[in-house]
Amino acid sequence: MKTRIQNETVFSHGFGKLTNAKDEFPAPEKVAICKQWLSENAKREQVPKSDCINSYALKHRIEEELGEYIPNGACIQAAIELGYKYWRGHTEWYGENWTNAHLYMTVKSRPEDERAKPIGFSKWLFSRGDLYFRGDAPLDPDWPRTATKFIDFWRYLRFSEDAQEDLCLAWKHYSGEDPPRPDLIDEYAIEAVYDRECDFIGFGDKYPKAPAGTKYLYALCEAEKDPRFTNEAKETEFIRVKYIGQTDDPTNRLVGHILSPGNLEKVKWIGGLLNAGEKPEMAIFMTVAAEQVNRYERAAIYAFQEWETRLDPVSGGFPPLDDALLNLHK
Image 1 (cartoon, helix red, strand yellow):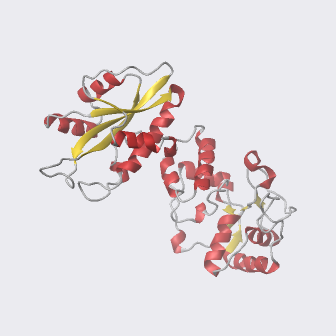
Image 2: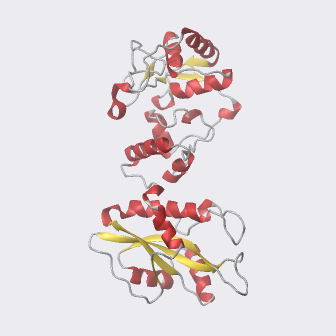
Image 3: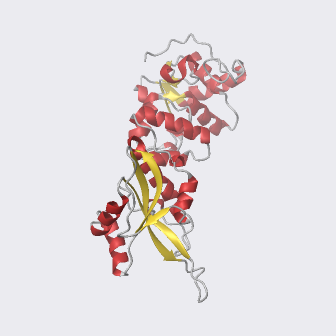
């Protein structure tokens, strides 16, 4: 995309006329404040497009340092008046109403602004500039710049459903695939596993194959006694989910897990059960169209990981998220 010439109207919110925004111009006193800050802290540079500064991120930086509200449009107008070139965004998403400018500049760094180089999704996102759900991400010290899994970004934006929805749109553009968002898995389906309200089978039990064009999602589980509620009069068991998978033949898949567990962690887990005279159980909790099963399987892994990090009655604490299940290679 070519660099824009400075001949566009800037409103207080930025470029474009938005449905829910007043078409007010940035207050001159706010523009003057931004010009002063830019004069002291910024420099015109023909940096790579991926390194341009997002005006929304920049306005947050100025706000933090000066302790007062700065409109996005005031930041843009100040930069234009100082001669900074910019580009605007990607019209295939939001058309000409994209509000932010991406400014060809460098700004003085603060010690706390030293960041790891973005990789994967973050690198792609920064180069596109489509930071509508987290406009200050390039300057945010907590943004997961080196994360590679969708779930890491999903969790980071957990306090905003709108931001998570926008993340899903960006992820699909980045990966070409529908995102494996954990809320695809109905919480009632998860609860059905822990409450034994779905179909459970053990070694040697027969279970029908999945209907044509579908597959089952299943959990490998073990039943444990809960020491908090176990006494001479009463024993309470709870379900621990250890693995999530997909199959069209639960009977043979469970046999395969037991006779040939696979990775080392599963060998240790299933071997420990066998040594104790126990076997894992399979809980079949969802039927999914075959063309969507990989996405739903990943979403289920994320959803059950979250559940498994709730209070652990054995240790009295929360296990690390990445230790929650045994199929972390997925």
